[in-house]
Image: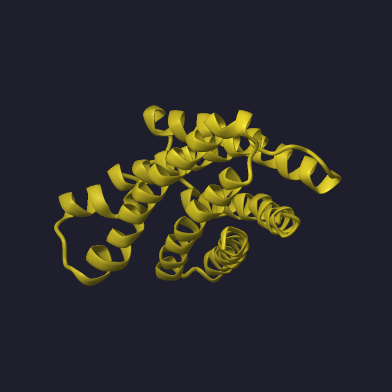
Length: 200
């Protein structure tokens, strides 16, 4: 069962990341928000499965990865569920929109960055649990560890106020960064599937 959960969640995560990339290219904000919830839904069991198969001496790193994954999921689901429900269906005043609307680069946008920062931190600790037995495992470990670097930028950028509504080119810059992230994360999902397939 553990192996099945891990492989299925990795496949769902892969499909969600690809779907997210396509939605951004098509300019569908609703689609992007909706599909991102499935990245969160699948990321948590994917990380949990890694921990199940980790060596005893790596369990502390694994448990840390699980906790950060859970916090990431909570933040991201709050942000995107608000976008597809309240923002999409309600008529809100400007002050409420400034806080809740992702496109306004306000509080919920900052929560989103914090969430992805915690996801990065989770992948870093998840990478520490992997014993590099094969070339594919070495790549998976390296990609997870390097992905952890995103934590720093995701944590610091909101504090610097780099993103504002009147920022020129904010939309295409955001899309470009997120498309790069998708391209980076797709191999992680593929390698995760291969890694878990070897487990008994």
